[in-house]
Image (cartoon, rainbow, N blue to C red; front, side):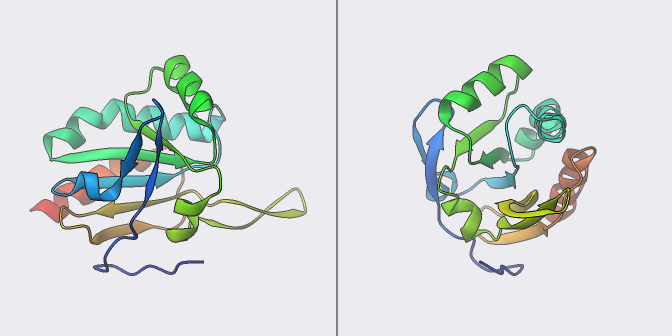
Length: 157
């Protein structure tokens, strides 16, 4: 499990987008990248988070940032999620949790007395040079997009 630090080079990744095209971190050089990890498409908290990022996307883009959500869901699941919830952000399919593991977003969770491995809701802000500018290891979905946008504005100024 990765333990990342501020200002370190962000782990390289490559994964399939909603449209089934490959997107790699190196393709985003020169942009701020909001990379957020979420457990599952079409679940309440994940929907709130994705809709809030979609709503604020023009503000992120105005600041030279792109927003990317990552989960284990398939491209087909992402397509339904994007269409059904009218999302505007990029989603990446990470079925083997490789990207999640590289960022420390895969780990032990518990629910109703049962422990299991799963996606840890977390977010990373990566600067245009590919270094980690901010980290949120534990995220509450509601209001998170606004929090990240505030940090991006602070990081740019």
